[in-house]
Structures are given as structure tokens and as C-alpha cells.
Image (tube, rainbow, N blue to C red):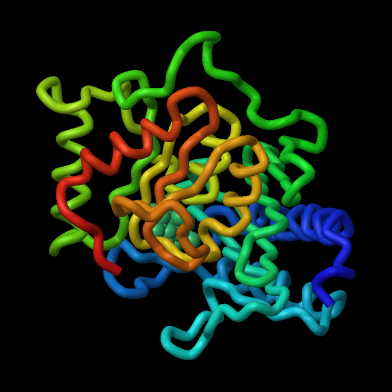
Length: 287
Ligand code: IPD
């Protein structure tokens, strides 16, 4: 069955669906209250659920034989990613941004076959940024702008010292993972450490991955997010020449649901950059 799937048709379908989701997101900005999930910084709104319902319904109508995995309907220990063609969806990635009207929320619509991301659409309706990619066919911003938008300066190698790196604090604010992250941030930033150019937190894994795909960030290090946060961005980044490896050392081919990732732009020096980044991690992330 997988061989007969028309990925261009799926991309076009997801772009159209992302626009519908985007309208629902923008029309509810500032209108919905929020609830806590695991703790007081792990947030969800009624709009997250409404957008997932819209996306899941339309996917099931058009592609009734495909599987669906979404953040809001996921049941830990029960929902399993299989080899079947699967839509992997975060209805609103950047929910905290959505609540605060910080304009970096998006809908993240991925499609995987044999657990490998093959189509990705990420749409930020606030800034009108529509990123889309198909495995083997490149990735684009707003249909025409081929990614990356920005190539590194000629002759420049990607190193930790000249990198702008995406990071997120995440929702765990104590324990091993919090220590590993904060110790590593300190080492990467410090004058007697790697002294990277800087960090940025866009508040959305998908937006961070698209920024790496665009060449606006050099890398994005993440521990704790899920397949729906990265599936779409994964295709967009890898089709822009970048790669996704493990966020702990030594994992060159992580699974899409690995939860710990390092996304790096393409270009000279990127493999050494990955090794150097891994060397700078203070401990090991656990999920
Ligand atoms: C979150 C964002 C955030 C990442 C978290 C995710 P949500 O997704 O992508 O950047 O650090 O791990 O949970 O909750 O806004 O859909």
C-alpha cells in the first residue's frame, strides 16, 4: 500500500488543512482559558482540542485507512506508533505562546510511513509562515521559497563558537533532566565553556526546527517533546539539508518518537559540530 501513496497529494491536503486549522487558532486567540496537564507549566486550551478534532475528522474522511496520532488524543501506554501510514499531529505547537499571544504558535501536521517522517507541514498563522516538505522533493516556505533561506557565509564552518542555538526549558523544572539542561546551557554559554553566539527559545519545537531548516538557527537541542512536535519539522529540516540526531551522545539515527533530539542545519562542519555538541552535554537526558 505504501508504494501507492501519493505524497504530493498528501502535502497539498495537509497545506489546505493547516490553513483551516490556522483560522480556528487565530479566531480563538485570547478567548480560551487554559488548564494544567502534568504541572502548572504544561498547558492546554480548549482550542488545542478543537483543532485536533477538526484535523482528525478531516484526515479520517479523506484517508480512512491511515492511522492518526495527535497530542490531545494520545493515551500514554496505549497509543502506539506503528509502521502503518500515520498522520502525526500537534494541533497547536507552542500552546504557551498561544495563551500569551506571543506569535510563534503553529499547527504541525506530519505524515510517517514505517515510522519515518515523509511529509511535513508547519503553519504559523500569526506570521503567515507555511513550511512544507516532502521526502526526496525538498522543502519550501510559502510554496516558493526553497529552504534553507540563508546559506552559511562562504568558507565558514559550523562550530559551537559561531552558532545560534535553539533551546527550550521544557516543563520539567526539577530533577535530572532539569540539571542536565541548565548545566549544559551554562557550559555552552560560558566564556570558559563554548561561548556560543547565543540561544533562542521560540517556544515551539516545530518552529525551532523550521528555523534550523531556514538557516536562521544553526541547531536546536530538545529533550522531552514527542513525535507530534517533531515529525513535520523533521521532513522540512532534512529536505533543507539538515539532520536530526539524538540529543544524547552517539545516536546518529534516532526514532521519530525518541523524545531526545539534536537538529542541526546542513553545511560544512556539521558532523564535527554534532560531536562537539554531544561532548558539551553535562550528563544524560532521561525520558
Ligand atoms: C511544546 C513545545 C515546546 C517543547 C515542549 C513541547 P506544546 O509543545 O513544542 O517548545 O519544548 O517539549 O511540549 O505543548 O506547545 O504543544
